[in-house]
Image (cartoon, rainbow, N blue to C red; front, side):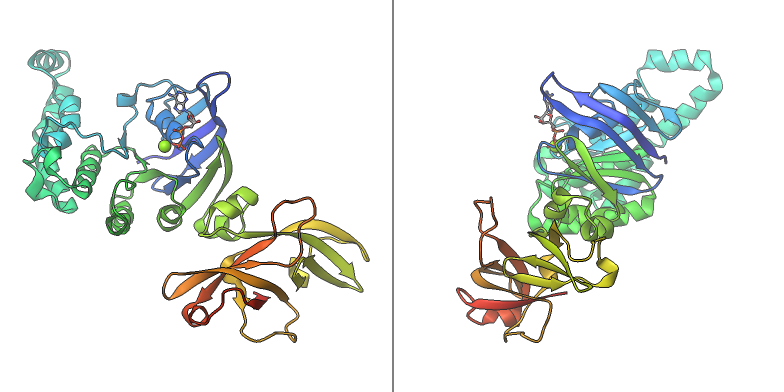
Length: 382
Ligand code: ADP
Ligand code: MG
């Protein structure tokens, strides 16, 4: 197993398309790193450059201690699992899983004889590896629960089974690192959750370095030891799921992670008599001392305040005694059963903006069961 390092890696497809820009990323040995971002942000291109399927336009890629920037894909010792599985349709599952190893350790009669003449000892070692391929395939098939499928062809398998075979094919190769490109996106929701758990479990068991690409932020949050967020070819933030969720580096990260994303309230920080308040239309918050940014006495500053929907408490009664309060009118309620989201329109307009200020709060089932729509709601902020 090995760490993977990208140093100032860029990819230009043409003068106008810069798919990846000066990407710096260090994936630790045995780490599960998720690269997440919207469609078209450069995730697949990044993965393909690590795999060697795409030349870099600039920068250096190392795997382990080896500079592999210009090494051919088959000599990089990594395995990639694709969204569409990319199984060979004319080969059985067994053959699909063993094919890569057979190429590596076998070859045709002539090349095997030639190897034996050149270096008998290494030829014997390769021969031994070659002989062990069927056992290895059986073992991996066992762990993935696909032993019964070994003699079938890909067209005789369900989506989930194909995904397992693609995974199996990667595992038997025992690569230095695994690369996954949205491997679960063709599966139905229930299977996706199941496979997500299995992948996490597999990572623990194999102790392998894994780089996993997805546009799905839930997948990113649940799978990653760390998450790297990308937008328009540029890395925005790298951190633990909790770091990127609670301390987003910028507006993009704040609104991309979470369903729905963070509320971004444009307002003003005002200092009056030693007290600092945040004020936006319909919202007035006392800012506690430990969160207080530098502000001169009797001055104010425009800021954007990020608030997660779960940090807004909707209160049934008017909370005049609650100093951290806002008020708005319910526009729409989305119920998910036990919880749901309440979209609230705040009074007033943001100057210079066409859009009316809105905020989304998470609410529990009891709150949702009442007839909330079109009612004014008091809010408190955690
Ligand atoms: P993602 O996987 O995040 O959806 P991609 O890495 O596939 O994004 O693509 C990043 C950008 O590079 C997109 O604008 C895409 O259109 C462009 N792109 C990808 N592959 C090629 C290619 N072979 N030729 C030209 N442009 C490409
Ligand atoms: Mg892609």
